Image (cartoon, rainbow, N blue to C red; front, side, top):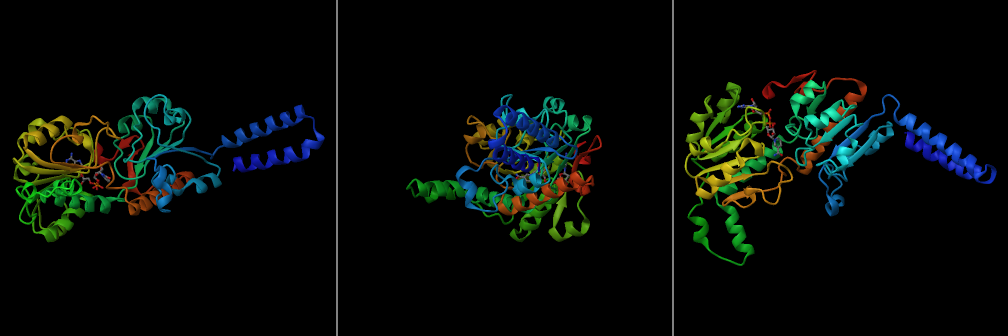
Length: 395
Ligand SMILES: NC(=O)c1ccc[n+]([C@@H]2O[C@H](COP(=O)([O-])OP(=O)(O)OC[C@H]3O[C@@H](n4cnc5c(N)ncnc54)[C@H](O)[C@@H]3O)[C@@H](O)[C@H]2O)c1
């Protein structure tokens, strides 16, 4: 609002004063108007909102619904600016000279996505004197030091449920890609080769295999529902048992003890958040107890695994295939060992950022901003940190 007002005012000064006021007076008036602009900008209710997203470059204009990138900015720029808020969007997020770092001291709201996470450390929180709200456009707010956010009285919220179908579908695809040994066949084709045996000696059917999900929340349940028609043996581990009706419908069996579940599985899928309890859960020792030849799909978070232990177990063949889209840190550096380990089917972090997912998490983020401006509560399932307390699974 202030931007529009001051632009119009500058136009007025330029046209009327050009012939009437001397240059020094014109400058004086202009300085006054700029000051007015600043006052309006800082007026109560006007917020500085920073969004950190991945950059789309030449792909930005290819789809009008591509909202999750820097260029798309979640599609909320006009709406925010029409209400007098300032909206800065960047992909430059890491290090002391980054664009994000410049805005840390005076931003009110920071929006980020797990696909290109703005790492919000305790140090950044300490510097962010105006910060009130941290929004995750997607699911998983582990890029934020949640305890530091709670201690500073900040609110952290995400768009719970927004991309769970996108991830569950992607996990099913990754299971099939690993079980059927699909990628080596694809690579043969593009390299002009033809060697059926090199693929067939370790390609299997999914039917009859034991699949265990570690975490049976929204994504875990959707995955098990999708796996049911494949006639697998379905097992799950979680802090909580799922509703008995649904358990019966899916035909999944609960295992309270994770270390009893894991050695039974031909395929393990990780579906828990990254918390202090799940960080490094799959270390060298736990991996050594898995079935030899196990396949692992992890779209949850990279840091749930011990990076080197996974790479070593893929090299030894103890893990016969590892696929996922989550890494630590992100973007993954060129030297990340998972890029080079054998029998992997890794991708950049993409499963939860389909166009359908983007439309849902953009709408969810806009809804929370709207409620924040109006002083209203968010839907309860969206809160990760509220009034100094972490959501139960993060405690
Ligand atoms: N790759 C992607 O694009 C993408 C997208 C969405 C979510 N995710 C990740 O997937 C995670 C799960 O998403 P969701 O929507 O299913 O969340 P959810 O909250 O619905 O489910 C998480 C489940 O994990 C269980 N859990 C938590 N801590 C546990 C522990 N220590 N031991 C056993 N079980 C535990 C919870 O009880 C819950 O049932 C997110 O937190 C996020 O990290 C990734």
